[in-house]
Length: 425
Image (cartoon, rainbow, N blue to C red):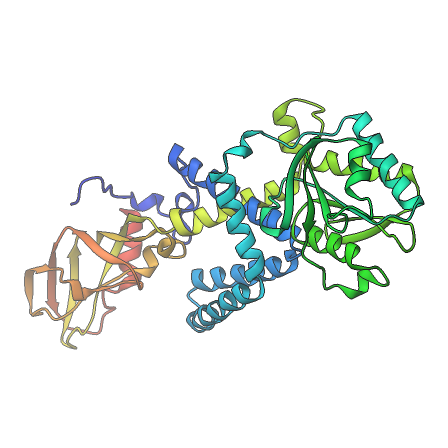
């Protein structure tokens, strides 16, 4: 018998479900594996939420759950259809979201390689700087001078900025107004604010194609909305025709009716990208997007259970009663010793979920049955097993069988008597 295999006592076998198969033992490496996958899934959730593809993800998850259930219950037709379906879905998702996927991979690369991202979170504007920004925009709107200001969030903007001049200047009202002066060369471009500094000016942004949200707005508003659809930046646009201020974030464009509302939008923006710590670091971590984090952890745990825990090779031993077949009419089996044997099987854990001793049959076949006592060796062909399981050991390998001549009609030594005698033993 292979090392590490133990025989399960016959009276302790669960004939339907073995609970130990469903209670995973998680080691330190398994826990790290689940945490790492949780981080990946949560990052994917955040990205999909930003790109407004959450419902696409939910649809894929539902179909994936149906596919996994079909695999567990050996629904071969459903499994085969879904495998082909998922191949098509994967290609379709790549085609539909190719721009978003490219952006996601670029952000990962930039986050790892760019040394300037060592700071843990974006810097907030102080109260005087916020007042300078609000006052400047209000003055520009009153004078009907067009302006476009981009306040960077957590996303990298380099990929979406075309042209522009490096500035790295201190945020101030005179500098803002000089940059947007109609006589200035770069007044038509966007000013980019990073932290408390004006990083660049005269930048050109990608234009939105969502006509329903733009309505009668011009190119500045299309640029503001376009960048907000691709990043988490806050874009502020001043219309030189209407003298109004609009804010674009998360793919939405809103008109600012008053300086107070503009100030509130700025506060809300900085609270989202750089929230003030109200409790301990761990409390803030678990409070923010807690539902998404719990869902990501649960999904990672389910995937680990299905693809790691359930796929491990294990050994299970069962006490299997001995049955005989093809007994000549003039003979009968008087006794078999022992009445049941221990059969050790190997297979993936999930293949044992709905199997038990009743799934394994032992029939003595193809042996020279004649009157008297005989020692019969158990052959592999005598065992009927569930699919995907293999026999590792049978103990004992030989049976002592007593065959007698049938003098009168008598009840044959069948499976029912074997189970009764085995239970009494």
